[in-house]
Length: 161
Image (tube, rainbow, N blue to C red; front, top):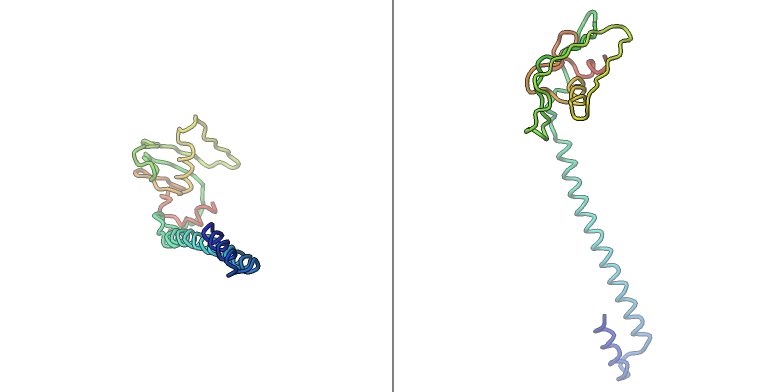
């Protein structure tokens, strides 16, 4: 920009250019710089969008490790008994930490019964609920509803119970 001002002043001193022409040239120059800045910003946004779309495609192609379709429904009387047998579990993101180590638990169903999991922070309460809801499968052992392993049950039907 300073080179343009210097050259314009020399041309003006030699009566080769007018103030109006200098003003018009400076105006067009600023418009050009502004438009280049906008184009650079758009290309930056396009690059970010491409990166985000790659993640969306990756998510759309993700195959869940837990069966979300099919499976059986329990026919007949459902007593609602819930049993966890010798479960060992670690979160996939922290495979070096075993969260549950041989946990066994049984909850019999009685009408209007409320069950509470109590314990200190980090003792596995949320992990137990995550296994019961089948957000994860245990490494070993099993979670049973009405005597059936929840891995064998139709997920939607099971969650409706």
